[in-house]
Amino acid sequence: AARQQQQQQVGGRLGGRAHARGRMVNIRRATLDDLVAMQSTNLHCLPENYQMKYYFYHILSWPQLLYVAEDYNHKIVGYVLAKMDEDLSKGLHGHITSLAVLRTHRKLGLATKLMRAAQKDMEETFRAKFVSLHVRHSNYAAFHLYTGTLGYKINGIEPGYYADGEDAYDMKKDFGGDAAAAEAQPAAAEA
Image (cartoon, rainbow, N blue to C red):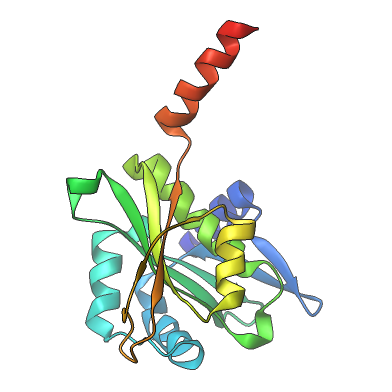
């Protein structure tokens, strides 16, 4: 019952359902019960893998920021692992640790919905000013998602960021908040 209520809240707020080959996929907050399936999805999709204690750390510290995509059989087919950055020298901000969607469920907008759900909670729950992430220089699909669909900008390049030595784009997306309000005020004064 609690899971259904949570699905309705997230689904209603974010349009959390997508069709996968005629079937529904639901976007919802992750629970402790989802962590093994999230790790399995990570192992199938990405070369960067995390120990289970890292997933526990995220869900215990920032339970509002972990989301899963669940198919009609209640199988986890995607996830976003996110956190609030503890280095406050840059200002309060979120960070996307990992995003993955199984190949069988790509091109359905699930990654976009997962990202938007986590970003929304970073901004609304934690009052984050921006969100950051790293993406492989060679990951063109993810780079297009982040820049073309989600509005991220390149903040820099981190040479040799990944274990295999590949460079990463350090990316950032500013949230509306105070910056958008400050920009809107001069425009309103001119009208």
